[in-house]
Amino acid sequence: MEENILLVEDDLEIARIIRDMLMRNHYQVTWATTGLEGWEDFKIANYDLVIIDVMLPEMDGFSLCKNIRLKSDVPMIIISARKADGDKVKGLGLGADDYIAKPFSMLELKARVESHLRRWRRFQGVPKETKQTSYEHGLMVDWGECFVSLQGNRIMLTDKEWELLTVLAKHPEQTFSKEELYQHVWQQVGLDGVHTVTVHIKSLREKLQDSVKTPRYIQTVWGKGYRFIGDMQ
Image (cartoon, rainbow, N blue to C red):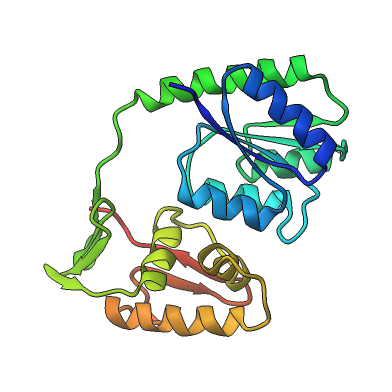
């Protein structure tokens, strides 16, 4: 079966060269020209590898890389004309598996694609982690069925509340700003995002019976955002 690759590149000439090379090597290729388009494509299909340019309209490559890594372990290769060590460190720190500076040869890109896909195939053979996670004080999250229970009683969350909980709980102790949460969950950038996140976090806390002053699950990091502090049983 052909492996599916998402290419996010706004330079039409470079994108066509990369796409044609991949297709000649029997890969299926989806090509997006903006960061937001790439994010939307990623959410509606399954990919085996993602290639991302840094300088993208609507959502830059670093933000796209971070959003994808929050959702998936799929291999990601950043391609960029920015060669500074700081940019490379930032990209790899956000979850990219590789960083290739432009200009590069198609032979080099092909070799790196093949290398990361081999690792991805091996990773896919590893048994998946449990679909349920239980935390102290009675919280249980069923990742497979997408529901939450507290003390054995099922809690009805809205789609956005579930997505917020998922981002936070799957990255325990990691602090997310309100802007980051808004961008990841709502896939938008805007001034109203901070207030929107605040309202939904408040509702989520109420449903989890989680106190702001003595939190069991969602902690406010003043001046920075929120993080998940629930202790697994």
